[in-house]
Image 1 (cartoon, one colour):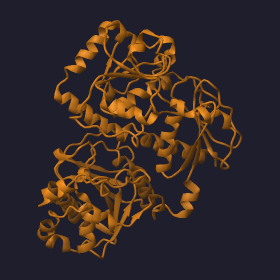
Image 2 (cartoon, helix red, strand yellow; image 1 turned 135 degrees about the vertical axis):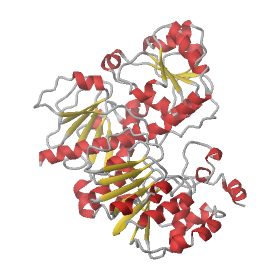
Image 3 (spheres, one colour; image 1 turned 90 degrees about the vertical axis):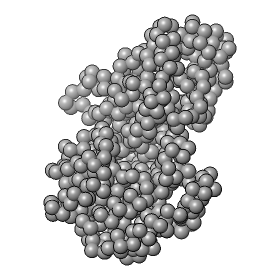
Image 4 (cartoon, one colour; image 1 turned 60 degrees about the vertical axis):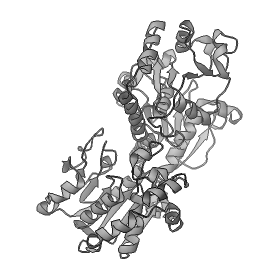
Length: 538
């Protein structure tokens, strides 16, 4: 019966929630609640555990930690085992620990989450909170129990069922559903560690909900709360902490902004800052002097034109393609090499590394068996000084080109169109077998990795690039370098003979990038640096 329901409803879709990113939401909860003990089920890379500075307990059967999750905690206990085994060990009872805040993000099956909730509530402080992840899927397919049947990489499983289960069997609980991107957060409070209703009725609950797959009815009965209106961000805090960013681009004027990659980059960053609970707007050079709010923060995407400081406005610069540093309060370097070689004295601006990023809100999650075909290049001609295109011509390798200025060159026969709308780039990359990339001499010398590499890898495509230092180590295994026709041909051959395991690993890495290298991840770092500037100025 359940399989039939799933088949009938597999094409159902629902609006994506676009509120504050769930990691930013969790960070606000940690700041407000200031828990003594924090429990997390399902940690993986540690991005969520990083938000906790409390005594923490983390349970995951296979840790893949990529963050420093230990430096900001007095105690950290890592248990590499299933949550069922962890609770069966009785470690919490033996240690006398009571949990103030818990985040349950383990196996994406409702019966697993139900057991995690039952076991966690027993050790909660009465005024504590339990947070559940992934209860707002945007399609019925991504809510399939069987991961192999999901068309795409985004998988929430059927953990959404816990919401109606709690409402029916535990009406004493306070259950709040927030629109935290990308798949929502459910916060459960008014907990009762002595209540055993769920455990006593576990078998009956699973019999009933194994055959319940009606997401339409589920959404019809939901009251979804905007994440910026959460009780962990009182109105006084919102007024005090909500920042406004003026993202200053090198685009000359609004009339031409759609033709500039910088504008689309800035737009993706603006949307991420808004999802993080702040406000932002993108400006061209024509409106650099405009003031929307007193004390708004200028965030300059440094191009070939220097930005003049505006009195009364904190100034931050993100060096994504230029090595010039203006008179700023903080500079983000888009390469470790540029950061290490920067000549900034002790009395200069604060600085940090902030690599390029991609727009996860626009990039579809890739799938392993997606049909990919051909080699593509997106970019203007630059008088033919695009080495990878040159190697393709010299070796008679078929490619497809989108970009201006190619028509009257030898590569003209490969041109698909003189322009490719920014909204269509990711569709091209998602269907491409190989994406070609190169860097300007300035970027190459400074180790400034092209945004195109981030976009292509996030789409699950293989990349061939000119040699560049500064590529994050985790990316190197999915990028081939070519500096001659011979090395170009070898790179193409290597990619086309990849094993299925390597292709699967590339798609898995594309999903990791959504957490680590998206604009949402970068926005959190920018906000953190901006708040530190405000603290120093007070």
